[in-house]
Image 1 (cartoon, helix red, strand yellow):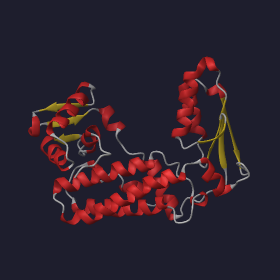
Image 2 (tube, rainbow, N blue to C red; image 1 turned 90 degrees about the vertical axis):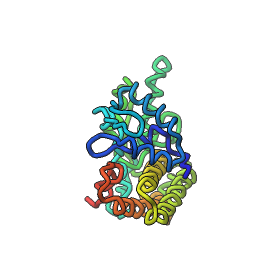
Image 3 (cartoon, rainbow, N blue to C red; image 1 turned 120 degrees about the vertical axis):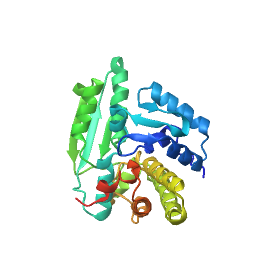
Image 4 (spheres, rainbow, N blue to C red; image 1 turned 90 degrees about the horizontal axis):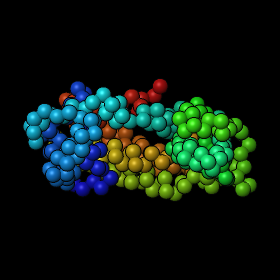
Length: 279
């Protein structure tokens, strides 16, 4: 069962249990289900230990890995992002019609700070409108100021809001199509929908190790689809947007996997419980 979007490091981190440990035997069994070799796993474990991310007692399949505090904090899902996605799908987060804009003009002498700030803006879902001006459909000012301060570029950042954004004569959903690569984002969600559908089909008859492998594959595909997704409000998306359908299938698949593994202490099976619930 080859899962090309999963790295060995991601596999190891995904196998973390509620007590912050990983069972070596279970880890190697799931790696086998993902067509990863024992050697791949051993090398990845060695690297993670050398980086101070895990400690280990025992050897091979009898080993127990323990995550350090920094590792535990760093591998949690972005629950706020997931919660917003599902809230929008349910109609619980209607768009207020406000565009959030950010502009900057960092001098060439501080180009490293400029690059850091631009990357932060893009990571927060911003799209370039024109040179040095970016748009987002969600409030992002606090996070932008933090990013600018971290980059040492806070004096160069300008933010404003508008309900009257026009891009080349286009407004609303038409403007969004010009600003964000919706076709590429849709492709990512189609892959997620396909993965979720396959997971639903295979879960009932799958043995324990394969169910964990299916869980890891599903979360990896969800992350792959959503990391570049600005989560535009439905008001700015095409009708019957594939992202909403993919998330609905993913939710069904997570529910099926968790129900099939009620006693498993692997945290991955419970990570998305809270974000999926209405608030």
